[in-house]
Image 1: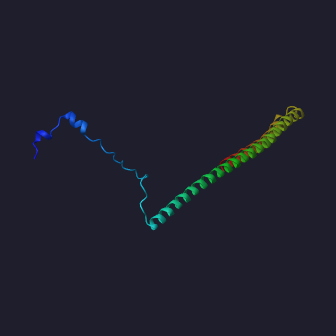
Image 2: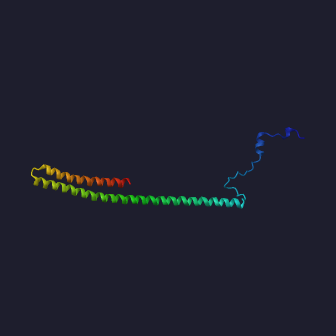
Length: 149
């Protein structure tokens, strides 16, 4: 056996003679690994699950498309309803304005004809105003029912 003194080297000598470390392969991630051989049953199940996922994705996109279509239809129906209500309101407003003109003209005629018989004038005006109030309240009630239902 050789004496220990002969085998010992200095630190600098050891550093020079140390081998370069060998390159080690890094651990591969699961996506880079070669696929392990899987049984046909596992592959069939995986294909079935993927097909189910694609089916669900198609169903979701179809639902979203149908929802957008329904929203557009509801909005179009609402706009048509609003146009119809505005048209009806203009017609009723025209009727109310004509009744107001009629009441004003009647008041002028009656006041000239009655020459002081204010009881007759009041009775005539009250009947005209009652008619106008009924027409206005019917119109308001119709619009309230259209807006609530």
